[in-house]
Length: 390
Image 1 (tube, one colour):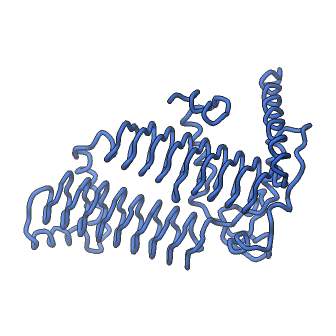
Image 2 (cartoon, rainbow, N blue to C red):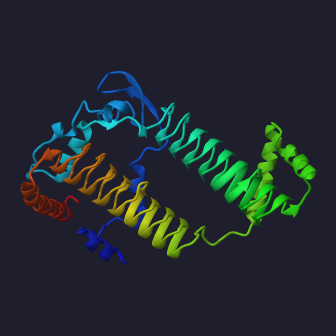
Image 3 (cartoon, rainbow, N blue to C red):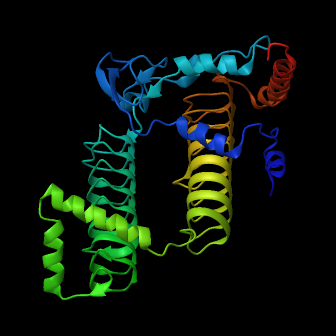
């Protein structure tokens, strides 16, 4: 399916932005790392937030944002056909409250970005179902780990990356079902390995050669003994091992008709990265259990379907140009909406339908107004394109 076919499928004009630049734009929409101290605009109390104090938005403490004490529909306004849509949408963006940080269903996890169903986590970006993890990125079902990235279903890990089912590992990368190992690259079903690469189902190996338990322990203690200098020497040797390791052309497993990297159990994926259990994906970074996802960042968990040019979509379908919407459908140019559908240019809605710029309409009014707004947007675009000032 080419780009024009995708645009036709979603009923949108062909994008003038390159696929790579689209992903850059979408990823830039989500602050995954920086935290600020600022005031909650509902209570005046100091909170931890992903938004800087001088950000032009209204920010609520998380429990207040998710509470029943406010309704995004109160910010609804009429569409003004004398002004561009995006100008009106930008005004709405500034006044509708946003949650301070995307941390919920978690305990002792205030100092994180985008964490859910977790406990005792500190300074992580993107974590779910985790406990006692520090300074890590994109972690799922992991506990007692520090300085890791993309390390899932694992325990007791330090500086590991792209690992699955690791236990008691230090600086282990691109490995699965591995335990009690350090400074290793691309292991499968191994344990008690040190300075090894490209091994399957091996135990007690040192520099890819068999060793006794005693030899393993002596070598391990030489580099992992509390000495920073010795540990740095271990890292130096590890980098040397990686430079000579045999590498897969792509880290794609159990895939059909897929291009990209780190794709698992998927089919018909083009230019996809960090994709799992998905189908018909194109120009996507991060997708899970999803289908028909195009030019998007982070779609799934739970599954999504028919998503176009959107960022951070959860359990939603038939959405385009949206950001951070949960269990919603048929949304266009919407942000932070939960369990809503058939809405256009809305922010912060919960359990709403047939809304435009957060104003409620009947089904008949909505279906009559939407084509007029889209035509108005096309007219505005044509004026800007033909302007001599452009």
